[in-house]
Length: 110
Image: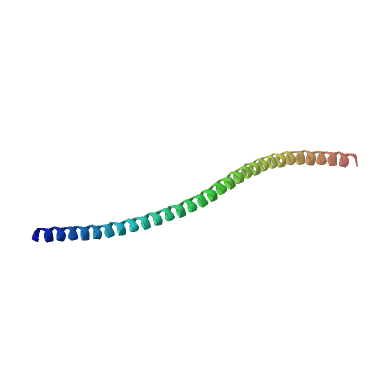
């Protein structure tokens, strides 16, 4: 009788212990699932932000390329304008000298 009571008591204690451990591990599992879900959501949000900034960076780099191309074109235009300006100054000086020469000839004839 005492042996059966002792066996039943041990079985009930083991059953209670196993139930408590089951609920404990179940709560740990649910908590871990929540943390995993939060981590996945955070990672997906981070990926979206990274993609957004990556697209903005690509656009900015494209704009920089376009601006650098335009800058080189403008520099080349400025160089050609300076050359033309120098040539026209030389031509203007030659024409002024010719005008002075012709004025001198006209005055000599008068």
